[in-house]
Amino acid sequence: MLETRTSVLGGIYHAEFEKYANHLAKGKHEPFTELDDVNRIHNKIIAQQNERGCGISQIETDVHEIRVPIQDYFDSFNPHRGWWQGKRRRDRKLRATGDA
Image 1 (cartoon, rainbow, N blue to C red):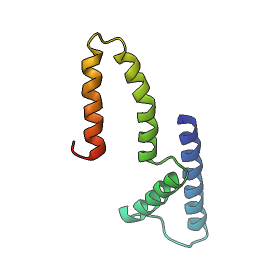
Image 2: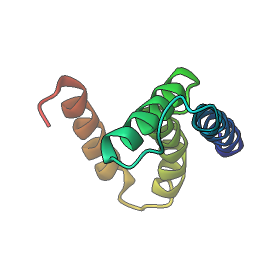
Image 3: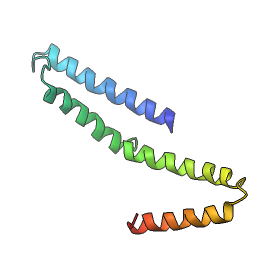
Image 4: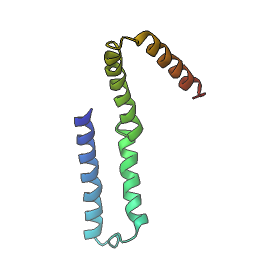
């Protein structure tokens, strides 16, 4: 997951800044001096990340899927796990219904 994201980010940044440099060299636009101009490049990068499955929310989902089994493993050592797991199930149900 991390290698994929690193590879995708590297490719996206390289392509976008290469495009910017080429347009700048050809005189298609002046150097970006306004924050809005820089934000436009940033928004393009974010959109491409999302298209390639490496957006922030997608990474958070993947991390959560890894975190749950790890937490379950640690919970297996908890002598009060019956009580704790029941509480976690209730919390998950509340989140799933949107009441939390």
